[in-house]
Length: 111
Image (spheres, rainbow, N blue to C red):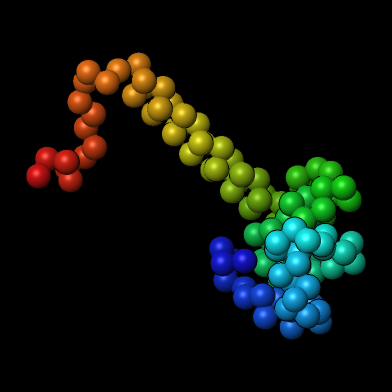
């Protein structure tokens, strides 16, 4: 919820449900109802996708996302994948260098 800047109370008010139900969704005690999935996604500006909430109903990652928002979603997913690949490459490079070689961590380590 924090990444979307929508509080549980705000989301509950928008969806006309209780804050307790929102908590149950977030804690995994209950699934978001099929009727509320798209409303939750819209309320979070599509930062949460239908697939993330109900993969049983929306099996593909872009299912339920409006076409005008799908490109944004795919761009975000690609950026996350590239960042993960960079981190993995840095980890492999570090392992390849071995522990006998110093690792430059930038200007802060020079002090």
